[in-house]
Image 1 (cartoon, rainbow, N blue to C red):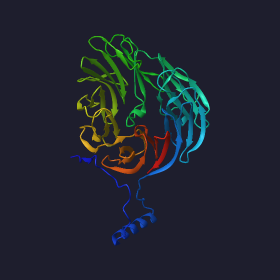
Image 2 (image 1 turned 90 degrees about the horizontal axis):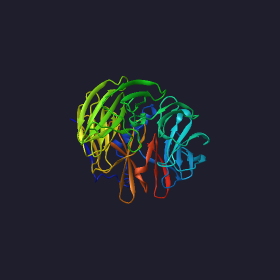
Image 3 (image 1 turned 180 degrees about the horizontal axis):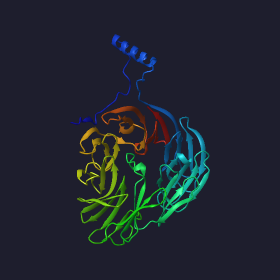
Image 4 (image 1 turned 90 degrees about the vertical axis):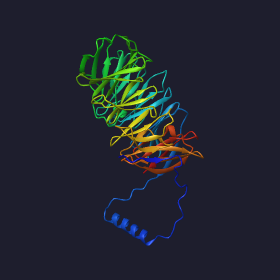
Amino acid sequence: MIPVIDLAEDWTVPDEPERARPPSPRLALVLLSVLLLAALGGAAVPRYGLVSLFAVPIDVGSAHALYGDTLYVSRSDDVRAYRLPAGTLEWSAATAHPVGALIAVAAAGVVLAQYESGDPTGVLAFDARSGRVLWRDERGRLLGALPGPSRALLLHLDEVRAVDVPTGRTIWERPRGLGVGWAMPDMDPLQNAPPRLAFDGGDGVTEVVDASSGAVVARSRLESLWPAGVGVNGTGSVSATTGGFLLAARSVVGGQLFVARQRSASTVLDAYDLGTLAHQWRITLSPAAFFVTGCGEVLCVDGFSSMTGVDPRSGAVLWYTRQWREARPLPGGRLLVSSSVADAPVSIVDSATLRPVLRLAGWFPLPGSAPGSWLVGRDTQGLRTWFAALAPDGHRVRPLGWVRGVQISQCEYRDAYLACPTVHNELQVWQYR
């Protein structure tokens, strides 16, 4: 039986520590034991808290990213790099348009900047040490950086390109076709499969391409009834079909390709082996659901107003929910689930059953990553925002502390640092432990 822990709305942490009292003999003995343990080389007792480091000016719509020992911040007309933890300005580089996303490729010593959504599109590559512009692509949108070799994928209106990150040199390119399914490693860190893309050429033939080399791994006519179609909303990952189906969406998760086809209010979901394109299973989901994402040991199939959990091996439906619309995989067969539209508390649940393990009423999962740590935040009265770390076993939260006047929805953490925009048009940085 899984224990359920509920941090309800009345959860509080004292604003001020209690007054010190004379140590009892038992407490003195415990303190002596801790000192002896430290003297003998034992592990220190962990302490948790937030340490304020520095703040830098930002604009409305600024983007920021924490990577290694550097904080990157975009403003309306430049990108800046600050050294952590001191906050020293390392460099500043002018941009012709506002930057909406920043990705550091540490192995290449490059920072990739994507202009904000809409026109104009474009990608800039900066030298991470000096801020010098190494190359630019005025037509592309950044799909993501690949692990291993210093390569990135760019999406154009009519083609997909893989480029060498330090130079911008094209490694491979091919027509975008009617639809492309892909999965980058940062979508699901627990999936260790090599990055691959699935292209629909428009003649019913699907080709699986290795994202690093561009080599065709598998090629097959998945279904002869699929006619040529047109792209929808310019995404290229959804195409129109006939034969009673309205839409077809392709998703790549781990070593599988999924094709979801909508018919009326339901969806027919097919699974294929990504290495051979051999058909594995077919299920029908109702209401309609389209995009498949990796949720650790299960698949999450997202619809307009629901989320369905599916066994990737058999296609068996494990659970269905309208409460939660987003899921982040955690170790140990757990999911951190939340919803931006439904009135449901953020929770840690068992991935196979959706049974709650820890309810986090009022908390908000923060974007970011750190080894063995997941941060959540919670707004309270008086413009106070609490931050807490989830224990690796998913059964407890450890409060880190509270701050005033931050925009919690735009906070980000990485490694041991937390950065949040404030109501004073600044980006505040803390170190946490």
